[in-house]
Image 1: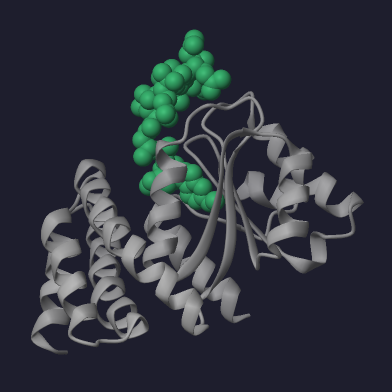
Image 2 (image 1 turned 90 degrees about the vertical axis):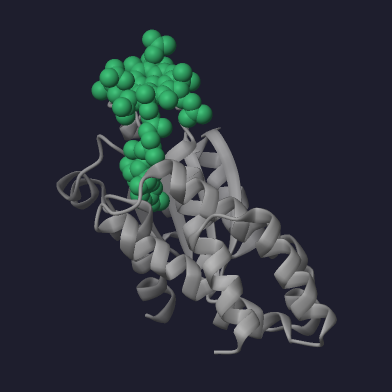
Length: 212
Ligand code: B1M
């Protein structure tokens, strides 16, 4: 890995937004391709953060700082990627389900998935089943990700899966769910394809789904 790519990775790991943006600008100005910066600088940094977060060696505030640093660089890199047609890992839509306003965990999942090279469409919070359906039609993702933090809103996940079935879209996407009250057995019960207990596992699962 070149010196600048290693420095970009380090800036992501350290959550240093200014360095991450400055180094990415410098690399682009020196003629480095956007996908090289993503694949060999930003993504390895975020992969490391994911491993450390899962192991309990990094915590939510640190991960958020890393994700912000990555986002800053992604704002520079993303338009160039789409302009050159460089392929992303896959497409994912994410939302916190209807009735639920908790979005911190969902935002982390979004950032981790972006860090893993996904094109992420974040629908936001309090998302109706029909809005998921509409977004699947428009964005044609590989994966639909739903988050719920309330026991009372978990059922909205089931309703969203039903809405996807009724729209004839269920076979076109993998459905991944998560959030503090959600469990693997709930995922099995409502017919989701996967459950992840944290943002790092969610991005790993998304990568597996995108390859399948
Ligand atoms: Co609320 N809240 N809240 N709250 N809130 C909880 C969830 C609660 C457990 C607190 C408690 O009572 N101990 C409780 C739920 C109880 C229950 O249902 N069993 C609760 C309640 C009751 C409420 C209100 C009803 C309170 C009221 O008004 N009476 C109300 C509901 C509003 C609504 O949603 N309609 C409410 C409101 C709020 C705030 C708006 C004030 C705020 C949310 C701000 C925001 O998100 N922008 C808030 C907060 C902050 C919390 C707590 C304190 C923290 C949640 C959080 O952000 N955790 C929470 C108590 C707690 O958890 N200690 C609580 C950090 C976050 C990183 O973790 O979201 O679990 P988490 O995400 C993890 C994983 O779950 C996973 O990855 C993430 C990162 O590793 N993950 C996924 C999440 N989504 C995933 C999706 C995936 C895969 C993995 O695939 C797609």
